[in-house]
Amino acid sequence: MLFSPFLVFSVALVMIFYSPSLIGDEDKYLNYAKNIIHGYYSPPAPNIYLAVGPGYPLVIVPFVALKVPLIYVSFLNAIFYYLSIILVYKTLRYVVTPKLTLIVSLFWAFYYNSYENLQFVSSELISTFLVSALIYFLVKSNTPAKNYKNKYIYIAGFVFGYLAMTKVIFGYVLLFMLAGNGIIWLFYRNSVNYRKGLMVLIVAFITTIPFLTYTYILSGKVFYWGSDGGNNIYWMSTPFEKEYGSWFEAPKQEKDLMVKMGSYYQFRREEHYKMTIDGENIPGADEYIWYNHHRNFAEINKFTGVEQDSKFKQIAFNNIKAHPLKFIENCFCNFGRILFNFPYTYKQQTPRTLLRIPLNGIIFTLLIFTLIPTIINWKKIIFPIRFSIFIFFLYIGGSIFGSAEIRMFTVTVPLLLIWISFVLQKTLKIRLRFEGNK
Image 1 (cartoon, rainbow, N blue to C red):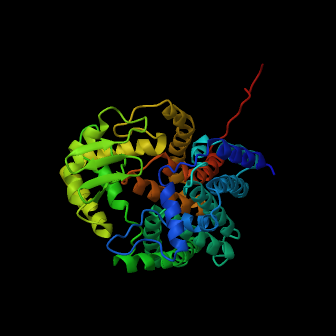
Image 2 (cartoon, helix red, strand yellow; image 1 turned 45 degrees about the horizontal axis):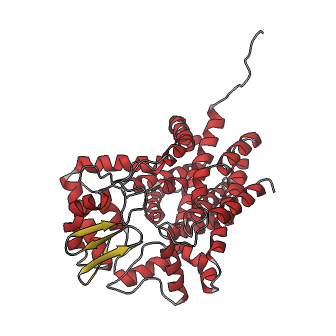
Image 3 (tube, rainbow, N blue to C red; image 1 turned 180 degrees about the horizontal axis):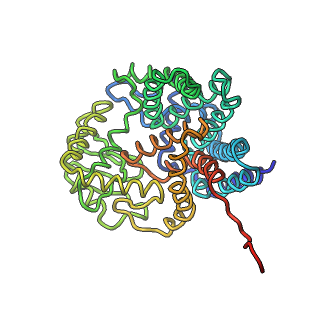
């Protein structure tokens, strides 16, 4: 009940800003839900298309099957956000004082960067909920600390696995952590924490096996999470001046015409390239992109599915080898987009960028402050937070090397707030009143 006004507020935002026009990845999630209803997920080879994981499409299948108006699907986002606030509050109650718990929970409730995703049919808010649930069940599994065989460990593992199937970059985080934790456990078999971590990761991996088995049957590749990774790394590897690694959707070829995909552009064989202006592209953006990339896309579009994904990666790695400093610059720009949604390639600046700075600036500053005491007191930090820290850095590290946006950072904010709160309570004391004589 304490946070119920935020549920009402979120529902109101959906009602005010909802639009029936499909934007961004909305059509992808809906199409995958329709595919599930018809008994498959991706088209078969050679036209394999695994743009997003099945986690969110599975959730919205009932709405799509019953042909419920899409605004009700968006109302799910309000529920997921509300539940994430509750989970952050309940988690903080285990690790910090009641006063700090309320302050930090309200900060998350007022974190307006999350509001912009409420009206869309997208996986951002369910991913945020899953991250909040993961850290909550990890903390619950730590009580009592010596018990590494309790139900919360298995629930945390399932949540992590479902998160990996919702945002596939967490799948790579899962595999990396499973390998690393397994190796360390071989040397520290008596460590309860490493046993807990390994158990969580094993359950998470088991949760993803049906999806990974399906993608293996489709593609012939082990641990194949999606087919859009090549497109992302291609744009991040761009060696051209005034291009900063931000993502564009790849055009597809149909006979003599490379047609518009999504809301971005058209690309014609007679070397005419036209971008659909969305109000933020600079004048001449279509000509710049055509001049820089048409030769690559003429080659890329000879392939489909997994082969096209591999071709994207081949060109990207060649770009990185030939222009390593430009790739480092693009990664630095990607870090800026993750935190503040700036800079973008061929985009005009807008006042909205200024709104990103206060909240994420506060979080980033506190995160930098938190790092040193975290390193110094690593062994004194409870297992759930240490486990979450690894998830965060692997996730952000992977995101920096693939074209990313601020919504990727927003997903991890609940995790960061719990980590920062735990460390600040242990290290920082603030007095608002002066002491001493009058």
